Image (cartoon, rainbow, N blue to C red; front, side):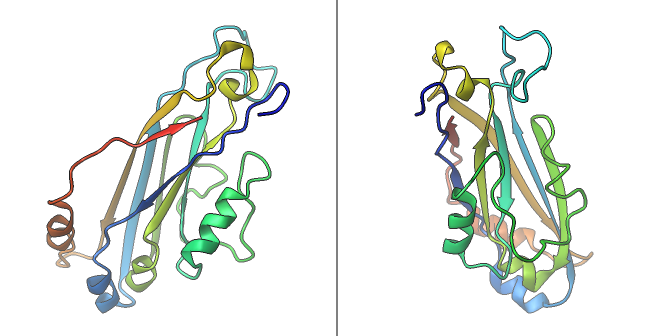
Length: 185
């Protein structure tokens, strides 16, 4: 924690339960992945207007999907080495997004659709949720550093008509118990 600014250093790593074998069998078939991240932001009661960048929202959250050609440890290291509110960019672009990372991160409901091959999606099985700035981090007098930030992440995949991915995914997640993910910012 700095003199008048706190550091948000927690993130959540979600390993997605993809039917990797089935996706690999589909090969070059086009599939869609829809990601939706939703969370509540608390408005800053002391700020009237938005003269500073983080004056209104208490905090922000973002998501990043592991590229197919990046190893999990490299992906994690890239996201955790934030130099500011965004992680450093990759050397190669991450194509296939409908909206893209520059526009999807406005507000507190982030949604985007990735479209690509099934074999590519099989390797994109990790999502990281990480915090960004807000008045919780910048206004230490409010005593909000360390507050939990609850969110919901929905990931759904869709393949061409007649291809059943639901059965395999349901079989893998049915033993799981639903939990709640919390990031302290």
